[in-house]
Length: 213
Image 1 (cartoon, one colour):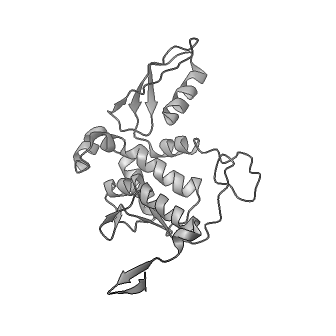
Image 2 (tube, one colour; image 1 turned 120 degrees about the vertical axis):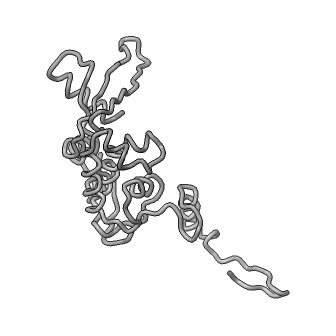
C-alpha cells in the first residue's frame, strides 16, 4: 500500500485523476487493485487499477523512496527516518521469516549474498506474468508468486540500502537444527540475555547429585 500510494501521488501530480496506472514492481499482464479506505468524511475511497510494467530499476527506485534516509539524525548513526542503528561492523546476521522465504522463492541457497539476491530479483522483475507463472510455478502460493518482484526488491533494498549491510554478512534460514526460527524464539533469547537471573545456569539433579547445565 505504501508504494501504491507513492505511485498514485506521482500520477496525480500531472493529472487530476487516474483510473489506470503502471506499477513497476509487478509483471506485465498482472493487474493490481489496491484497496484504500478513509475514516474521514471529507475523503472518498480511492479506486484505481495498476498494470504491471516489469521494471526492476523503477521498482527499486520506488521502494527506496519508502526509506527516508535524509531524515535528520540526532545521533552518530541512523538507519532511516532518523532511527538509531548500532554499528554492525562485520558481525554475521541471520535473516529469517519472510526474508528467508523470499530467498527460497528466488531459488537461492541460504548463504546467498546480497548481490545474488539483486541479480535474481532483477531477473524476476523482468518477466511478464505468463513467463512468471511458468518459470516460478514451484512457488505454490499465487500471492507470493505474483508479488515476488516487489517482495524481493523490498527485502534487498531494506538490507542493502536501509541497513547498509555488507554482501557476505547475512544467511537466510527458516530453521536451525530442525527447530523453526521465528520471532518468538528471538524474543525469548533477548529476554534471557537481558535478565541476569535467567542467564545463570540452573542446577539439575542427576543421579542423586547436583549438576549445573
